[in-house]
Image 1 (cartoon, helix red, strand yellow):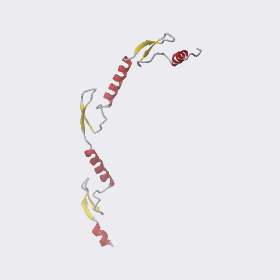
Image 2 (cartoon, rainbow, N blue to C red):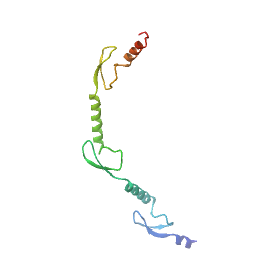
Image 3 (spheres, rainbow, N blue to C red):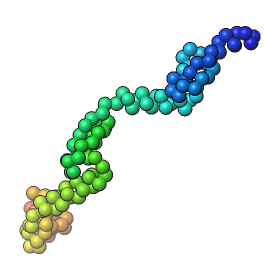
Image 4 (cartoon, one colour):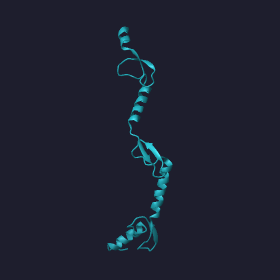
Length: 131
């Protein structure tokens, strides 16, 4: 019985770390699960396409494997988001509510009323209901 096991067991180097180990089957080329997992991670990483991009905030070049990545770092992402928010605030226009004559700021082009109560009041008047 030992002769059969001894014939199947061959000493070979690990494909990942090069350490000699006893190979029991032909398909097993790694000395441990850790070496196999590390080899698989490196294979997947090598298979990914590296893209060269330019950060629109700081104009710095950076490499990434993610297609949806736009900025080089979190600081640039945050700086861009705050700039976008300030642009949105600057687009607001001053309007006057036709119901209560109060002035208010709105970023929406078609907003007429300052609040929901004024909107509902105007709607009831349009429909001919009592106010």
